[in-house]
Length: 355
Ligand code: XIL
Image 1 (cartoon, rainbow, N blue to C red):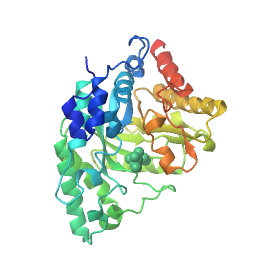
Image 2 (image 1 turned 60 degrees about the vertical axis):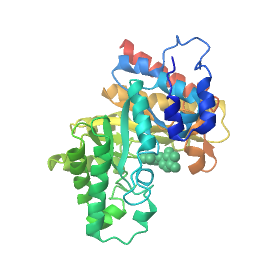
Image 3 (image 1 turned 120 degrees about the vertical axis):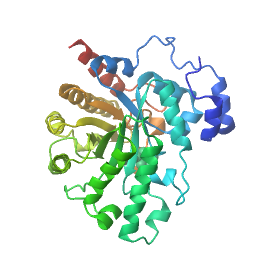
């Protein structure tokens, strides 16, 4: 049985001739004939989902990428193809082709899809950042964007990162085009528009460096508490989870996740990876595995906190391109070999199942 995309999907995704050739090969990724359980089976028994960000180019062109994704994960997040610069490259020209393909792929494979994202300061189209719009126009542009995109996927996504990275590192509101034009109200408005467009998806605010206790996670706590008080339909806090073994493991992760849950919202780790300065050594891999295990343990201790990793193979990870001299941040190496971090996550999930 072909567990991957159909040939037509691949061609539509832009995989071209190479992707077509890959699909012709048998989809056997493991020597054990498929008996080994993936993380998703263990996660299900532990009552959580385990997901990954998906690079849709890799999805279209690599059999092994597809096989490992389907076998290990039951939730996907588009790494880039639901971002504004991709879905509306020119004003008024909407392009959901790659995202639609991923949603269909997920539906065929029993996976949920987390939408990412509706409001952010990065990966905005040039027509928007370079335009000279009035504040009132920006308000309308944002409203229309949210209604169109969330409306397009209405009913098919389990969650939306409605507002991504609204906070600066010191816990103040991040200075963005949206804050400057609309004030802090942009957050309230964004959630209300998203709710109108999609009544079902859980609506998240998502940010980084809020894993442990600290000024930025305090600010997230205060932000979400305020939204809830005002009746704004925020339903989740997304904790990205981009860690680096150089900086130590954040303090108070379990306590922090618990206080978010106590606000009455869902909590998820949404973009976990653990990078390291290169070269890779066995010691660094062991530290990385320990960080992954502690993150998953914190999720399981709090109950019902799902985990998404930001890519599952070092062959397709954003880290080397963004953090000079760093890499190897994911669960599988570049040849799709399982790393110590993979076994740490697997064992943490398996232990939860027994308890
Ligand atoms: C990253 C992608 O992984 C890269 O491919 C892209 O070039 C830049 O964005 N926080 C987020 C994600 O919310 O959307 C970012 O994804 C990583 C940091």
